[in-house]
Image (cartoon, rainbow, N blue to C red; front, side):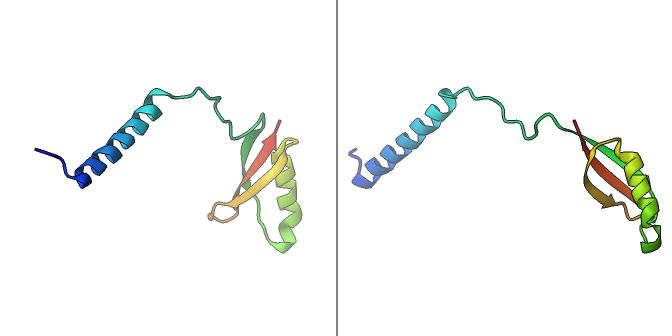
Length: 91
């Protein structure tokens, strides 16, 4: 039985796809892993301090006490009263 031209085209395309997949699997190139962050360490501190206009000095003091000399990255409210999570970047 002789193949029709459309069958030959499909066979060629499927052979090319199979060849490319085989090449992708068998010819893996060694690469160095990518690290998302450098030598920075992040610390998380739990704060129990009110955040109202009259209590901002208390909040700042709690934030400074928790930082340990690190740079402030984010303050995340925990939605339970006056509780917050503070993220600090430390070397």
